[in-house]
Structure formats: C-alpha cells, structure tokens
Length: 427
Ligand code: GDP
Ligand code: IMO
Ligand code: MG
Image (tube, rainbow, N blue to C red; front, side, top):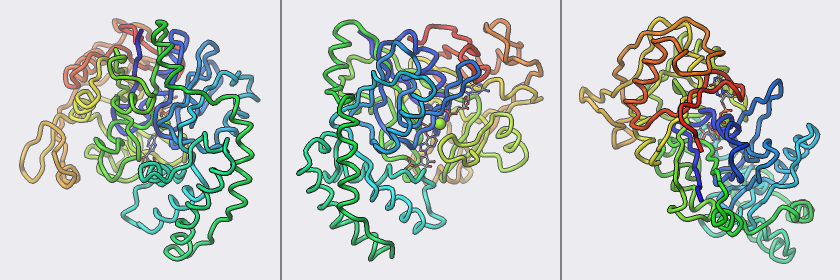
C-alpha cells in the first residue's frame, strides 16, 4: 500500500524529526533515503530530547523498522556511536536495516571536505565538514566504497588503495596536508564489517515486499528542497536529492508507490551555511527569531540565519516535490509580534518576480516584497485545535496555505510530540 514521503520545504531544519516522530506509531517502516550525518533531527518525547544525525527518526518508535537505504552515505564510526548512545538510553536498535548498496564516508572524504572548504575562503559553502560532498562525488565518479565492500576484504583493500593513490596526492601536493595510511583505514573499516553485518539487507526488496503486503513506508527526507543538488541554490547546497524524486532512487521503490508527499514548512525561514537568502534579517529582529526559535544548529552548533516566511519558496517546494500536505511548524515562535511580514515576491533590478528567479545571480540580488499581517499575543503552546488559535494566527495560517499552493494539514505549536494540531491525518 502507501509510501509517504516527507521533505523539507525550505533550507532544512524545518522540524522533520518531530514530524516523523509524530506519525511513528502509525507507520511500519521509516526510511532515510539520502544525506548522511550532516542532518540533525530533533525529537522531543516527554522530558527526553534526542538529536539524530544518521539514524531515521523512526528508531525511537518501538514498532517501526528503521531503514538506512541505498541513497544514504554512512560514516560507520558515527553510526556505531549513535547506536551506542541510543542503546545507553534504553532504545532498542536491533531492528535497524542498512542497505548493502549505501556508500561509505571514508576518512579521506572528511579530510577533503575540510581542506577544500578552507581553500574556498569567502566562497565556501559552509558545509558540515562531515565528508558528504566528497563521498557523493566518488559515488558518481564510480570510485566509491559501499557497505557490501566491507564483507570482501580483498575488494575493500583494493578500493581504499586505489582511492588513496589519488586522494593522498591531492591532500599532500595541493593542500599541503599529511597523507592517510592504507593499513590504518583498512583495519578500521574491516573492523566494522562484523558489527554492521546483522543489520545489512537488500532494503529495496524488503520495502517493496512490505508495500505489497499493505504496510506503510515513510520516507524521511533530510536537508530541504533548496539544499537539493538539482533544485536548490547551487552551489550552496548539499550533494544529494532531498526532494521527493530522490526518495525513489534513494530507497529503491517506484514513483507509483508514493501516495502522499508531506512538506515540512517553518512559519518563518532559516538557513545554515552560505548562499542566497532574500528574507534574511541581519538586525535585532533576526536575533529575536533565533532566540525565540532556538535556531542553533543541531549538528554543528552554528547560529542559524533567520528571516521571514518566503511564499515563493513554499510554492517552489510544492511544485518541485508535488507536495500534497504541509506541516507548518513553529507557529508558536511568532507569538508576540505586532505585525508579521511575509515575502510575496521579489524585485530584481527593478523587475518584479512572483516566483524564484531563474538564475542564481538574480536570486542573489532579489529584494523581498513584503505584505504585513496582524500578529497575536496569546500563548498558543497549549492549543490543540485550529479553532482555539487566536483569530490572527488562524488568518496567518490560511494566508500561508493560500500562497503555498497545498493544504496545511498539521501545525506545530511547540517542540513536544503532543504540541501539534493535526487538521487532517498525515498518513
Ligand atoms: P529537522 O532537521 O528538520 O528535523 O529540524 P531540527 O531538529 O534541526 O530543528 C527544528 C527545531 O525546532 C528542533 O529543536 C525541534 O525540537 C523544534 N521544533 C519542531 N517543531 C516545533 C514547533 O512547532 N514549535 C517549536 N517551538 N519548536 C519546534
Ligand atoms: P537537516 O536534515 C540545514 C547545509 C550545510 C551547508 C550545505 C552543504 O537537519 O535539515 P554538507 O555538509 O551537506 O555538504 O553541507 O548544506 N546542510 C544543512 N542545513 N539542515 C541540514 O540537515 C543540513 N545538512 C546540510 O550547512 O550549507
Ligand atoms: Mg536539522
């Protein structure tokens, strides 16, 4: 039966972890289909807070099978550290399935990510430094190391040797760094083989069988639409396809299986790292949003850049992903404002644009055109139905819905699992 895809509609950190956790007891599988431990998904259950980087948020729901599918890049050291951390907190992690085809983040990927960023100086992307870009680059250039390679010591050694032949030249001669040792990497990764083996499966087969049996598969995207390698603000993007199309390739299921695409949309906008951001607030209002919303990176601890809601971005996300439902998060953060600006279009060199401009140069120069809406002062963190929301909050939600081009089916009024108004079922 249904496969449901969840995608970030902006630049990541929209509240995907919370959204996945919310439906955790209503789905059978939760699948990560792209990205790696560049992600930081927060889940708050009662007084417990979890920050997940590589593992699907569904791992916290006892009846869900969490899956790391072929499209993800895995840093095995991080994987086992994250698993250990959860086990110590009493979470059962045995059910986790990992695709034999997923690619591995190797020490030289992390090293290259860091040195190339340093080299870019002011032009840097602001990556998380986790080796994501170099790992996907090797995947595409057919030089990657996959999970299954750890089960064939000869192949593993050969692949690392071949990679180092190249990478060490770059590290030492281009960047003046120390080269990496073959034996050290080989021993480390061979050591992971038996640890990972119990989890490894043909995850595409497992998921397709599950769908045939009428099970519900929830595909949890990381990052967001504007960080997508094709559809994002290139080159200030991540190196995978978080958009819904990427879910099929990254999980090994056909597009005809997907019945719903849930877009996670923050009631304002944030971004981490470099790149254009038309509604960014560099003044005390931006600082106010950062403080109210706790906008500090889960993965790198960096301050998130903050700005007002950008309607053309939401419409773009609807279009690119085929979003059927939005989950509007962090509405409570806007409480207390007299007037709330919403970007309804841009001006670029005196020309009005209702949609995101076609070129990156224009987007860099886009000046937001704002409409202003009345705010509300009442605390809404205890509200549990749409009708209980202050009238101005209702109007704000309805306006965003109209501008975004898909129904808002859920609203977040706090980080907790229960702080959600579900207007229509998300699954
Ligand atoms: P993700 O990467 O999309 O999973 O999002 P992050 O976890 O990086 O950032 C979202 C942050 O907002 C987390 O700290 C969440 O606990 C928090 N959060 C999610 N939904 C809401 C909400 O509706 N209201 C408030 N106040 N916080 C929320
Ligand atoms: P979640 O899943 C926000 C950003 C980085 C950088 C760019 C490229 O928590 O929403 P990378 O390390 O991926 O090569 O960095 O992408 N980025 C994120 N920003 N949330 C994320 O994940 C991100 N993952 C990567 O800051 O600008
Ligand atoms: Mg995050």
